[in-house]
Length: 400
Image (tube, rainbow, N blue to C red; front, side):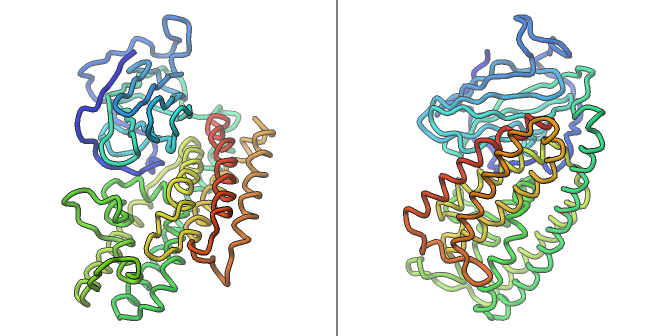
């Protein structure tokens, strides 16, 4: 067993789904030679089943190596803060898989399909700021890392469908963002406010993919509350504050030149996102983990009213995250139904229950302001999100 304590600053990331296929290069190993490739551990246990003991200042992994294939990290939070666990690519930026919102005393599993190569593991106590990382090596087991050949057609279909979905959403995001930026730059604030939540729907539906680009996400979707010292604030939420400054104290509106600069920057970054997503290949574990990641986004930012602090349009984002999770789930259902029909039915029922609650908050072609929700309604939504997240967390393990 190896224990890692906080060594220094961890590069910030909020990327619950790796947007690229897991094709990491096998780099020369400096340490941690693996002797377990393709077989069980010496004590007879499954070498691909790893335990993680996380607390507020340490991250203890049961092993620093594992054979390629389907890995399961069972993460227990022994600390007092909500924690996260990540498997990162060799560059320390790409998110191969992650599990968020692990409350004190809880255990959550991360299941990923990993090819041979160098990785990093990381715990992130408090979900912000510093974290704890360590090197992790996946050796070549000689076994396929994806679903069985019998499921190949269903797997290929799921991957292709999700890639097409991402392509469509990014195309709509570009169009809507350009229109929003034009309205904002022209000083047509009422029209820009009306379009803001509608344009962001396309971002929120594919949020795990959009966030997987570690350089773009903070430029486009960083909240003011998450700014680190010296960090420049740009993107959607910077403009949001300028359009809805009522909750800000002594706010000074942006000049016309500043408005144009922020709008142009957002459009340029959206085009970069669009270009990068043309080259994405997906795997079923990425899709399954992404579905769960979207519900984690709801639990940590939308149902709490933190994401859209200035505009109070959180329910739009909430619905978009649910939409994205449902699309991912639907794509994997043919595989899931053949392997675990009971889990399939349970997830479907809980999606329906959550949607029924959300539908009660519709207003016109959108939703009521988050501030119109009562504490009881917020709790009902939160309970429904948690009820869905529990079976959804088993989806990836069931389909890989």
